[in-house]
Image (cartoon, rainbow, N blue to C red; front, side):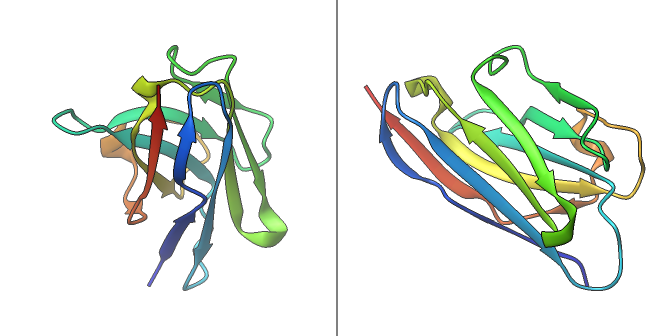
Length: 124
């Protein structure tokens, strides 16, 4: 059984920073592509960022480009999302997602493995 566990969410003022972490564990399934998605109240879950196995390819949503950075440490089975210059509209539950294919994807339906989410709240 594959598990993805997020941590690092919390309450922060606008302009502040947070770093989310997601640890993958379970049977020997390599999450070759890892991504972050978010879901605000009353809205659909949306793509935030994704990273390839080697880390050489990263993709970002336009709304977070230049403010968020995704990275990974394969030795620790962990993916990170550094979030800077946070805005109230970044408030959402943030989910880690994984897939076994090498191709980086920004489509929710292409990720079979999901974490339970971590709440990020940005106050104005």
